[in-house]
Structure formats: C-alpha cells, structure tokens
Image 1 (cartoon, rainbow, N blue to C red):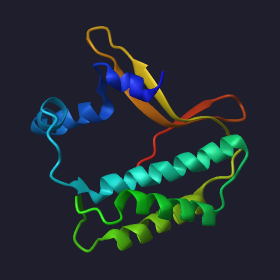
Image 2: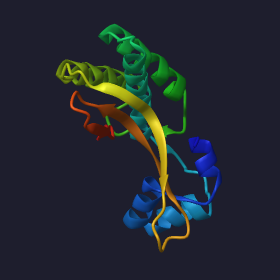
Image 3: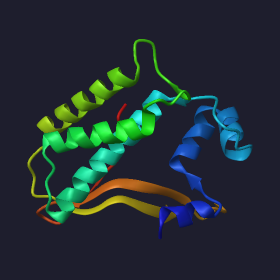
Image 4: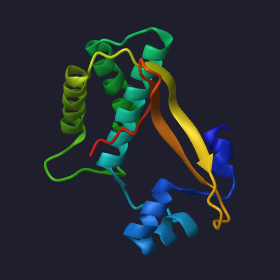
Length: 164
C-alpha cells in the first residue's frame, strides 16, 4: 500500500507516538488541532534532505547504478537548495545558517560513504511503507522503513537512518 493511502485513514505513526510521549501539548497542537508551526527547525529539513540522498543512493544500488561521492554531494546540494534556500520559516541554531548546514551535510555524507562497508547485501526496498495493528488499538500504526536489504545468507536487514 502507498504511504499516502495509509496516511489518508486514521492511524498512529512512530513520530506521533513520540510527540505524545515527549510533549502531549505538542501532540494536541500539531496532530489534533493541526496548528501550523511557527518555524521549521533546520535539523528537520536537514534530516529530510539526508534521507532523500540516501534513498537515491540505495535506489541506485538496487538498480545497479552506484553513486560516486561527487554524485552524492551534487544530490545533497540540489535537494538542500530546493528545500532550504531563501526560506524565512527555517530556524537555525546559533552559529548555523544555510551555508554551514550545506557544508555539514557534505561532510556527513563524505564520512558516511568513507565508512560504508563494501558488502554484498542486496537492496530489497527503499523507503518501504508498512502498517500493522495491535489487538486493543482501534487504528493501525504506520511508518516507513528506510532500507531493507538481504545479506549473502538470506538474513533480512532493516535500517532506519538517523542524522542525530
């Protein structure tokens, strides 16, 4: 099932559950009252862009088109410009701005690729939606698995990328 179809029906997600546990008022304001945010944290957009680049990398691996570091950097630059350039609603931490976050992203991706093990894992899926139900819960829990791979002995490996 498509993620948009899953989101169209009543559901819970890991982020909504986390919001409720961390701050019930945040949950109420954002999930129930659907109030717009006053600002978007730069880290939220940054993480989204990193996820886009990693999805492109692993989709390429699945299709037999390995991305080189220059391609990964170019992808990050393009997505970061599309998502963050000129936006007044993004709030940066002290000492950060569009350019420092751009450089940070390039650095993070360089270190990630440098430390990526050369494995024979087969990419099964990238950004794969899922849904499951718990007996006493009236709505399903939905989400997206960032990466599903299979190793050389048939073990399925699920990866959830985090930029924090």
